[in-house]
Image (cartoon, rainbow, N blue to C red; front, top):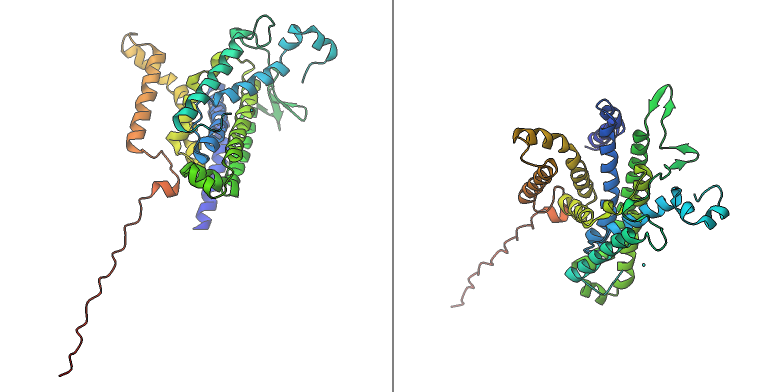
Length: 351
């Protein structure tokens, strides 16, 4: 049995490593879709710490994504040096904290407002001093460099040309693997068990001596770390950021990835993120022909959203606990064992 698992993992690993080369046959656009899907896997894994482990409904998670992206864009683009000549003189070579007492719906509303505040803030911070360039966004963001190796440029290895989208694919894949290992260790640690106790019953967890305040803060901090790191990768990968990329719809989509895959279960979260991140892009090639079949009466983008909604409704009806739920949540409770009724033994009466 163990040998079969090793063979299965080995074959799956080879398939994942070879995937960009197979997709490259059909063009860089398909490799870019795979890159975007892996980026959303990182986001979903980070949100799973907050929602899946600690049970805190966070609808403003995209704010951390936006902060990381804009920080990378400001440090990696010429905009900041152009807006502040003093910084340009100092650096001629360029520049290279949530509410814890709320629960349930109230916490969701507060985090939702936090995400929207960040988006509006970035959208309007172009006057009186132009810091974020407002709705026009920041362009010319430098690509990521690791030990002098520029991921944004084509490279040649043993005479084989590797495009930039493939370079980013392997970087994202390595970071996903590292993130999965970190989250798996967290899940089975004392901190992870404390998070799950808070998720099940916060009052009971506090009565047992768990410092719920610090642990909830830690969950938000860990999730924000993953979100900020994903934002940095997004900015360097796209080369452009704008407030439109961090709308409420993005937060809802990331939450849907966690819920659709299976709350609190890392393999399920990965499946949900891959499905919801890649499906809209794949449906671009389906919505066009369907639009032509209707004589152009339906907008392709609206038709694509309709197909996504129908797919999600179908999945949730057939798998209400998610595509790959946690084992303890995906199995039915064992049937109670009937207790044998003692048979009375007649006692002989002395004559």
